[in-house]
Image (cartoon, rainbow, N blue to C red; front, side, top):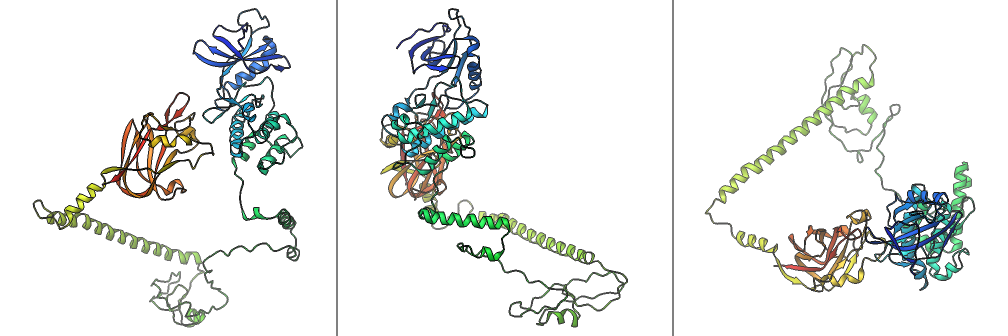
Length: 580
């Protein structure tokens, strides 16, 4: 119905009243769909009666909400406190919100509950917006099915932001009620507060989340809306334990609990041995420990395990005046003690004659010069190897190249087969006839399960450039709102084909794409090799550097262009070319 509201600026013309009256501790709020005469757009305008100081708290909350930019909450365009004199121009207290088109959640639930995946997506996206409001200190309020709108592009929006009053805990409880309503349909809305019913198709994790959101017991409820977002992001985990009966799972949990208790209390090994045996972990492969040599006791080595090894020559460091001669040796004795002492060999592998020590020798001081020599020896070896490699490279790139150029001087007869090879290489990069596309599907491995206009996919290869498949509309960034790396369409050619490239047509010029090929329709993105990349302006040919043999062609859109409400892209026609 059309209504007239006094006290509003001439800029806003109310059209239809929407929703019922919203009573507040200081008055009543009424909502209209209105026309902004200046910007020529529809807006939602809410008027608080009376104005003036009675609406001060509500207007202050609206000004806080004006700093938010999230698709889940209606944006605040304007707000004024007004005055108590209802007959004075501009006396009304009002808040102007973004008008959100779409079906309200209450109307949608009249047709029945939402599927599990859709319920998760709706509540998660709404909770993300509420969490953003909580981050700036604003409790949103007004989280009811009548105010939640399902946008045509798959997003979710909340009208009437903010409500007259609200609390953080109230928002958590209300989100739990909305999740219950999504799972139970209109009957759950009518029986709000009784908790989710145990019915077929209600996942246990979502039922538990509803109970936690509604719980008022200390330590049982959710700590924040951000925690709810995190739980909704998680997918139910499947593991071998999920097939166990409830009694088996309870026994396993009790065993783990007793084990942790006894470990924390430092229980003796004999007590822990009475517990049921846990499954044995697979042995970890590792290298055998290196043999250690004790200084106090002789060590005997098996010559079959430790064969004779020639050791390098190195002079033995010393502090006394005696000279020590060094010579190489090879270990052949089974008795290492005899080798080290009876035969007069030092532990570093040098045979030495006794010498007179004039002072105490520090082990670190005697080893340090030898370590430096080893480092120097290794460095010289590496340097020599580098010189050899550099010399070989120089010879290969200069001498041999010159020799080849002499052999292939102009006017000489080319080797047999070289001409045909060059011609085939050049021909292999040339696009040929179009290849028929058998079928195609949306490829969205990083998506949240929301359909990406799946029904429009056949329009991208129907030989009609006036029809197209388009992505959803994303806000904030042409890189899919920084939500994922891209989305694409996977085309099935029916069998392996030699592919030279594709011709792409779009009505959103400037989109960025990768053309990939692969064999597994269920493979991850890395399993598809990139054949060509670029931007599509109108009709663009993307040719591979070399032909690729594959059955599936993935046109992966990586960058969008500005649209009316954000960023979007489309594919009007896709033609795959065979290699000649």
